[in-house]
Length: 334
Image (cartoon, rainbow, N blue to C red):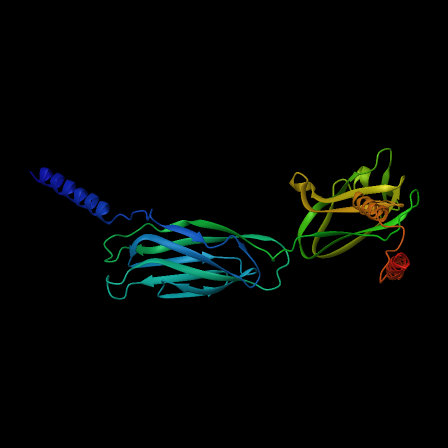
């Protein structure tokens, strides 16, 4: 009998234990969404992490780890208190009314630091504890595996600009200075750029664009491009001038298109510039048309100047005719 009683008591305790665990077990807050309002953050600009719980909560604590070399904590909303210690912001909330003023969302804002000159990929690492519904009857599982949000902190880059500088006149078969300038007040950083060229030219003519590198080797930019085949680095404040020399074999119009390409991105074009060179005494189609019209106008101009004023012969002729008629009349009468 005692053995049976003991077994009943044991099963009762096990049932109570299992029932208690099932009632108080934490559940996953699968309605939680976390987003950032931007993925590229410039110096002195803000980025905000937005938390939407998908349901009201009476309590929660979120820890956000960040790179304090790039960012600084600014402010939070939807929290009872928040503070930054080193590279971690702790945002805490509890409904002090006991359930009548829960929170369904919160936000944490950071600011990118001044003086950043390169691109810096970084992450926010987010964990949470103490999450519960408004009356505390439901506990949610802690988030121990960090939720990551990627951003890049970088300056507001300015596109590269290519200019072609030269003077006229240009004489065929003579070297002519052609300077190519690549500039930007804040250019994006690249490790492997190349300068290549394309040309259009008169029939049976050649166009060579020579440049001498640091090793005193001469290259034709049109044939082989400029720079190491693997590319050269560029970035930041750039005002790079290449002193090239052009040689044109015939008179006429030549068009040169320069392209700055990124070898690390399938030769994507970073910047381009097209310049037109007039070699020798070149007359364009527009000028020919203007000259032709001018010649036609000259052909129809009169060869003598038109007469103006009164012709004195007309009055005298009239007087003479009248006098002659009067004389004839008088003569016949007598």
